[in-house]
Every structure is written in structure tokens, then in C-alpha cells.
Image 1 (cartoon, rainbow, N blue to C red):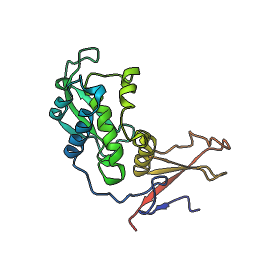
Image 2 (tube, rainbow, N blue to C red):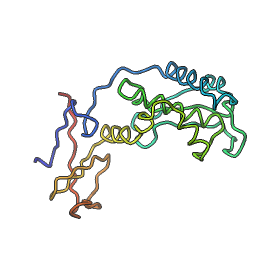
Image 3 (cartoon, rainbow, N blue to C red):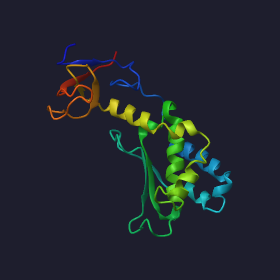
Image 4 (cartoon, rainbow, N blue to C red):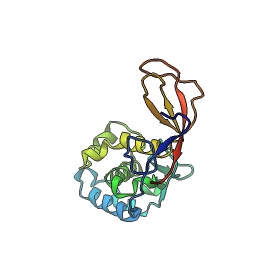
Length: 198
């Protein structure tokens, strides 16, 4: 294997580093309205101000964000211990890469999750988790890890490669020999990822 440049193909899947062909973007507003409509039909949310969710401004996170998939940002001065309603929310931002056909189900779940925060459930406590479990698409609820992996691979500029077992870890920064392979404990070698379209 040539360790100086590791070519990346645009046809690679989410488990491998590379450039991914961008699927058509979904409208954030349309996605939001469909999630709100579904929330209005949930009996457990009938006492909450669900119709007020449509007034919350929606935005997008930075394209190179990896750990943050969506966030509910409260207005200045609002404390999480206060009585929170949709009026307390400055905006809800979602990762732009979730807004395509491949991740649309996860985008719906992300909006549902953030809307629960906007309805007054500021932490991830027992009641929040109970309400979150009402989401109809259980598989979408579990897509967070694969979406993180997808984002990490998109932003990968380096591969940390074990010279012994050839295990590869995609990263955005060099390891500079600071990390070792989990399996054989050898220092990992940095390999620059060469991005190109095929």
C-alpha cells in the first residue's frame, strides 16, 4: 500500500473515507411542517404548545460539523430551569448533510428531538426519553452513530493506519505518533487522504 497518498473514490460508501455524491436537498421548512403535523397527532403531546413550533426559525449548522447533528438554541437570558416554550427558542439548527434523501428519516427524528426541547424538555431526562420513544420510526432513532461516521468520513483528511494489522481510522487531524492501535498496540502512521472525483 502506498502510504504517501491514499486515493479515495467518490463511489465509496459511508464506512469508507471519500467524497460522497450529494443527494438532492430536502426543504427544511417542509420537513419541519411534516414533523409538526405528526406531533399534533400524538396524544401525549396534546397538552403542549405544538402549533407554536412552526414559528421557530430554522437554520443549518456548519457543513464541517461532525459531533453536532442538530441543536435547539434558546434566546438570550433563557435558563434551562425556566418555563420553556417555543417562544423561548431563538432557532433550531440542523446539519445540512442530513437534509438529503439518504438521511431524510434521521432529519425528521432530529427535528422531533429538538422540538421536544423547544416544548420545555431542556434535558434528556426520563420524561424526555419517554416522549422521544413515541417517534414512529425506531430505525431512524438509531441512525446517529452511522450519521456521525458518515460525517467523519466526509471530513477525513488523514487516515491513521496500523502498520501491523492494517486497521484504518479516518480523522481530520494527524496523530503524529501519539496514538496506538487498539489491537496490536503499534504506533499509528499518518496517511494523507487524496481526494478526487472518479
